[in-house]
Image 1: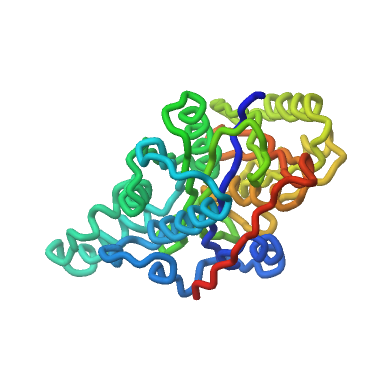
Image 2 (image 1 turned 30 degrees about the vertical axis):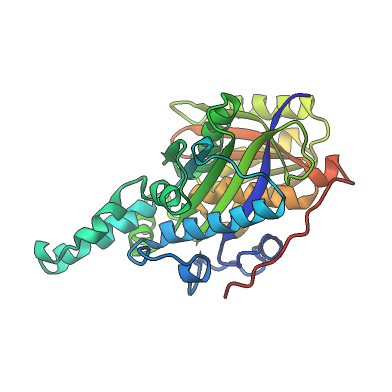
Length: 341
């Protein structure tokens, strides 16, 4: 049988909690202008010294990864050598917060007030590095910074390493926190967003000949970049996906940027099925935009097509095969819910 990339574990830290079922049920009805994770405490998720000075984005990524690994354990997946596991992080603007936090004392007082302990937090791969350190992972370690396409590109990277047999398991994290630096950046940009959402979502991916025992499969990823936003290419890719897979009955889209209206016009011309514009509720979810779409698709019990874009001309389209649709009698593990508050 042909091997495919399946999602074996999910862990989430979101404004609507850390249980996926609760998130899917509540993200539409409890969405505020700025959705932040309130009262987050890493000690509720993992007991380890030396993490107190890490930025919120890194702490959330460690917590969501801990939950995903617990979820993986519940699925009965075998332990793997640490060098056969890779960490792939997609993030958008969290490092802007970290840089401001590091430099703000210098602006307000003097350079002697800058804490050297906070300097490592300003490095872009701070998240992926700390996740590898905390969980003892020795495989490939990578960070993608590509706006709302960060999650899609992190999946593409992980898929490449899995299919090349460089690793056997990929831990993929998308994370962004919202602090005054990001709010300032958004408020002063030409494309001001009325709503933003911070979160951390971790998926654990493996190659498998079956979707049994997984949440579902990620299939047929197509990603491209043009010097301008081309709806013609998107039209052709989506049309081809719908033609090749007549079982797609749900399209999720919406990246909260200037492309959204053009994408909507194209979709209404070529698709008559269910459409979900996730940005209506999430606003700008930054790097997590595509990962929210994946979770919603998996829990919708439908085969779905996901569309993601950014303002730099990057676009991505891929399919989610839900276990519920293709395998109605599939093995479904008992999902233990963790009370961590």
